[in-house]
Image 1 (cartoon, rainbow over the protein chains, first blue to last red):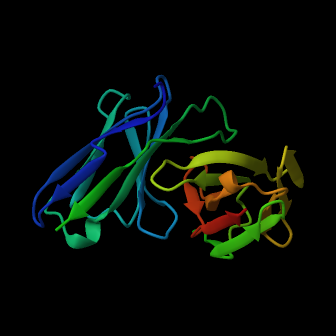
Image 2: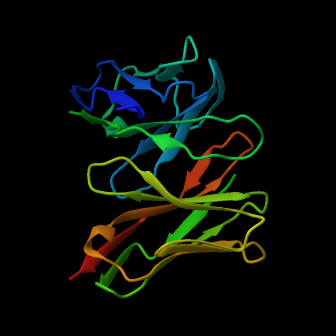
Length: 116
Length: 112
């Protein structure tokens, strides 16, 4: 499968624990996005990267959240001291942008986080 | 920032009928509007998109129309089939880097 992959697909954790998710974008895609989706809602933007540079963080991303894309390839999203409100599907998307025209973002299958 | 509203939240249609989903956006600078289909437990997949220099785009049974003056765009599915059953999301570009602002989604159910 040459699409966007995410690991793990499901994560159950207890409140207060730290979790880390990984996203592998489509090879050579220079932009990578993280979104969060709760039940019955559309994905909400969290943060994005142009190569290894993190360009913007949403206000949804509290200080407990951190994301990295160290070599401009895969990315990790870490949540520290998880809360029940963090339970959601975390989606990663990537795109290849060469100019100023917007192009399709390809989504991964998501990581479903359940905080008990 | 950009705000996207989507209606209806649920839509039931008989197989063979048409389905229409409408979205409005707030930022007049938005110029790219994709539509995603998400089946239960699966990733969102782009089904069609439209840019602001075009008023309508069609791909087989799917079409999208854009009214920049009114700041709304619509998805039209003709001759619906059971496999069209899914949640459909509209979105608008919210900044120059491609950040998407999604609508809340429309659950489409096509009954045979």
